[in-house]
Length: 336
Image (cartoon, rainbow, N blue to C red; front, top):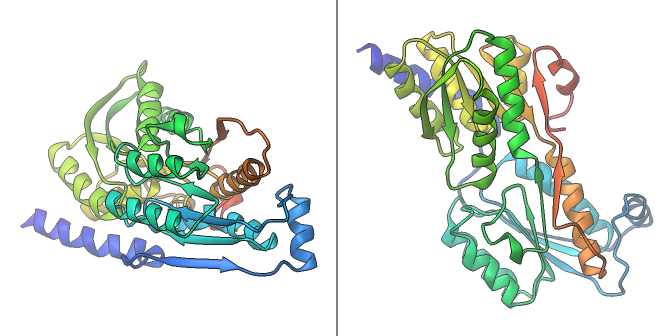
């Protein structure tokens, strides 16, 4: 009976926590194009992102699924493209590799000049990347690397291994004596596996024991479900590391509903996680990314590629920790 009540409370709390950022499951498509105003052109030139050709370009943008993180990546890309009078088509991958392959095929048929690509599945996306290469369309791979990374023009992301290490450092600071911990991972995603590997590397020489490492799908609902099972099996857990704040918020909901004192550490620096950190809850810290800077670096690289300039094969954005000590500095904006 107690377990049933905990599950009910978990579900209610999770709905409340993620309601403000939930999005429809239906595919979202949007195409943006406009003639550049003088102000917009000046803005594009000032940022170093400009179209040096007389031709107007058409871009494709696809990510693994809807979410405010990817909205933050997309915003500076759309702004620069619009400022240059170019066009961008945005289609999210619905967390379905087959759907994302169809999206890429649609991009090719529509004659896009370059694709911003974030894979649903780093391995299963191989045919999509190969189709773009065969069509002669450059690829800016962002956030999570494809396995055939040698085929893309550039890869731009947070240093995800370091993000995991930063979360581990925060954990060790809060629990210097060590203890039992669990990891919520996402094996099909290279960014997620890098974070998990970084976290495990960060605690390897300390007194922490990993009692569970399970796939939480990177989603609140699965994070809640998996964490509830972990809590039932381990009554002396001190902390949970989640590879993103979405699954971390699910873990947080389960911990609160169960009345447990288990610390949560995530990755992303999302608005919901920052809000809970600021309240001195069990959500202790998040290794923050800057999706805005990922977007800026991606669109800058895209125009360099189309203008015939060289770009680095891999570009990494440094993560940083947000915890109780500094969270107030990051609450004004949804994303940094």
